[in-house]
Image (cartoon, rainbow, N blue to C red; front, side, top):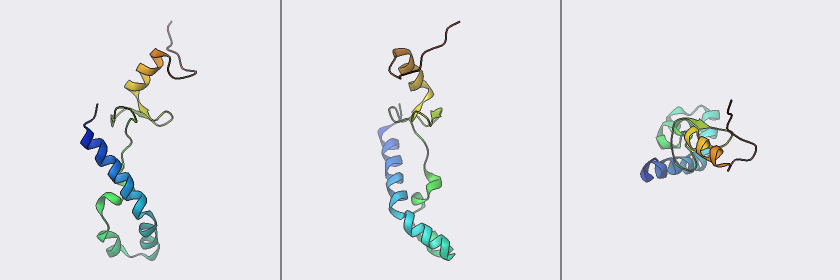
Length: 89
């Protein structure tokens, strides 16, 4: 489980990316790299990191489900994900 502050920081970054997306695109198209440098560093889309929607875990993220592998396994074993069942042979 990730710390609440780390999850909040990621949400803040996502808000900043959305807020400055148009301005950033316009500055890039104009080739104004000095203007780009003056924007907040956290507003760059490269700073975003995928995190599990339930626990906030940054590693082992499965894009198709939006959760980490650990959470995916727990939910699959509990039968909470339709169409997924644990293989046993």
